[in-house]
Amino acid sequence: MEWIRQRLDKIREPFNKGNKLEKYAPAINALDTFLFTPNHTTQKGAHIRDAVDLKRTMITVVLALVPALIFGMWNGGYQYYTQLGEAFTFWDAIGHGALKIIPMIAVSYAVGLGIEFAFAIFRGHEVNEGYLVTGLLIPMIMPIDIPLWMVALSVVFAVLVGKEAFGGTGMNILNPALTARAFAFFAYPTYMSGNSVWVSNASEVDAVSGETILGKLAAGNEVGYSAMDMFAGVIPGSIAETSVICILAGALILVLTKVGSWRIILSAFIGAAIMGLIFNALPSMGVEGNDLTNFPWYLHLMVGGLAFGIVFMATDPVSAAQTMKGKWIYGFLVGFLSVMIRVFNPAYPEGVMLGILLMNVFAPTIDHYVVQANVNRRKKRLKNANPQVETAV
View 1 (cartoon, rainbow, N blue to C red):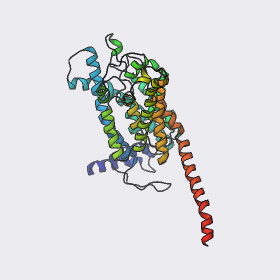
View 2: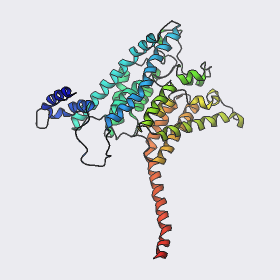
View 3: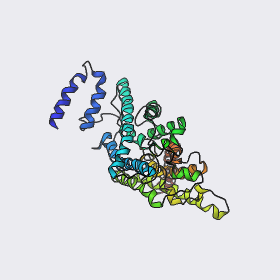
View 4: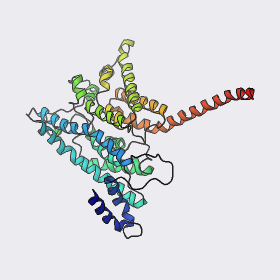
């Protein structure tokens, strides 16, 4: 490591202050702090004294995403070979999925980091670390057959409009990964929905039908999968959203490292379960339901992007609520609204995307009223305490 340190110091010399390449220092500094702990501390402004910097926090999230990513690669190949009825091995499946997914990740990082570096150089600040996670999340929530140029355009929109327009990492009001998916969903709906986008090469083979469970329910068709299939994740869907087991493994990493808020995760699942129970109770109240309202509440928690969205995007510390009570309210409404949207509007069966983005907008309002309630409660307690103080005097 000492040899690498010396080589980096040598490379940095032309980028030091006063030298001809000073303007491009953020680029070389990003590489330096990615490999080594920064050799400086914050000198001004409010900050927390901690040994873990933002890059290490982001890398923890990336590690938490790895189980879902690897399973998504395998499931991509599994869905392809099983739909064709061909014999295959584990390595055949994961190899096929990797050939589809790795180029998407490469495009996402190349385009996103290119924009981040350009803005850092133009504005004269260090490269923001937030895209380490966003660059991986964006491909993971896309259909496996989405064109690479569409991934690139979605990344450009997410970084420029979702982040940089608000000031960069830490200033965005919307989750950048979901902003990218929303852009792709509304700009290119035929590539983001239907029964031919969730299984590799499905559009080229008539015998292949890759309709998701929510799509089947919205169309009034039989689901055809068991609860264990849904929990394990051997179903069509976005690349990394299908396996609840792998998502829960990632959630455990985030909670144990205190990177993700367990309050948001738990309250969001509670909110989704309650909304599902309400819909399940409609027939007993004399209200005629449909396949989506009659779908068991606990299965609502395991299909679509609900679990993945709650664990990895609703917990985004920038766009989520910040107060303790606010996290409970925010998380509950994310889950509640996600199931409500997917049931009430079959045109958007994946309600978690809209549910999280909507609550991103209202998160500051939730925090405002939570803080204001605390202030009013303390004022009331102080007012009640004054007469007792005067009597004692």
